[in-house]
Length: 167
Ligand SMILES: [Zn+2]
Image 1 (cartoon, protein in one colour):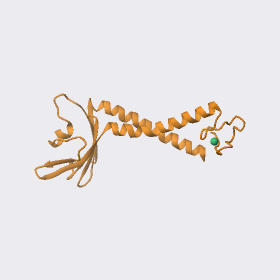
Image 2 (cartoon, protein in one colour):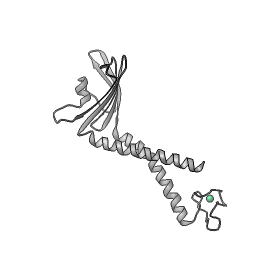
Image 3 (cartoon, protein in one colour):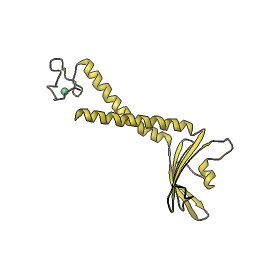
Image 4 (cartoon, protein in one colour):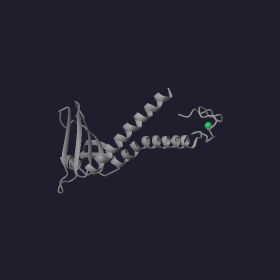
């Protein structure tokens, strides 16, 4: 059970580290290229765009098209305005709820979340895991209980002080 738990936690930490690195890579890349992925339903389009250091999550009502799922990848050009603003002809302000109007009609609503928010969140599980691993390793090198620090040289299989079984 303890072994299974460790494998599970390691898998989560490794997957999270992978996502952290991928998001960091996309962050850098978002200044050279932007991408968007859209999913059309009968009456709305849900779009995620990665552009200039942020992800944009937008719901467009009515649907932009009926192509199902579409993916686009484009170079940033020095003359172009950010693609969201290009696409909708509206100004988007970071951190504020996005409401794109056409006349008095609300065309799209959404939020933007900077890449660094996701990079930070995905970094937490691997960092926590690494700290635990380092603590256990230090304790096993020193011959002390990883939980309470009791000297385990006489009883290496189980801590007589707190009952921890060193792994
Ligand atoms: Zn102990």
